[in-house]
Image 1 (cartoon, rainbow, N blue to C red):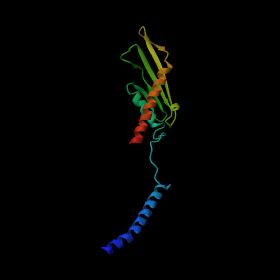
Image 2 (image 1 turned 135 degrees about the horizontal axis):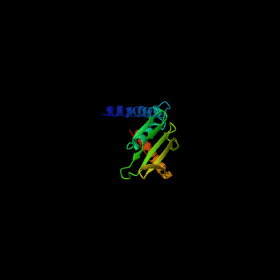
Image 3 (image 1 turned 30 degrees about the vertical axis):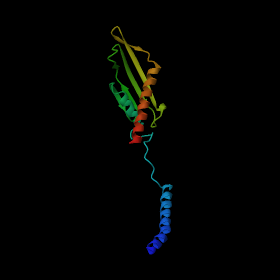
Image 4 (image 1 turned 60 degrees about the vertical axis):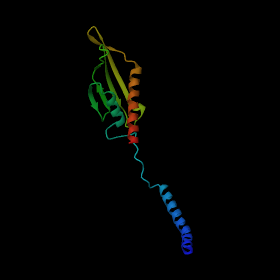
Length: 153
């Protein structure tokens, strides 16, 4: 028994030394600059001509309106006239431009046309600035949510 105690007592510092060396080697590998980088969802996605988060968010936000033209390379989405069933005497038409490949607030421009029915004919009417600003805000929020979703997956 004393012989077993002697060899265990002799091996303990040796085992502890090897453990410390292995731990230090493992930690130094963590500090290395050669690690692979995390693949974060980029704010600039260029598989199409414009930012894909803004593009998808715009199409999702306008899914209730009839589209007349979409150009993913140029970043243009045009809608046809849309009449809200709750207000049949008014109609809207939108022109959305995505101006950049980055997900930024100034990369989106929304233009709107509005007409009201006056005696059986459609007459141009002013569009409140708050209307286009609200639509821009909805699209940008949805684009940020899409990007966040890509980061968490």
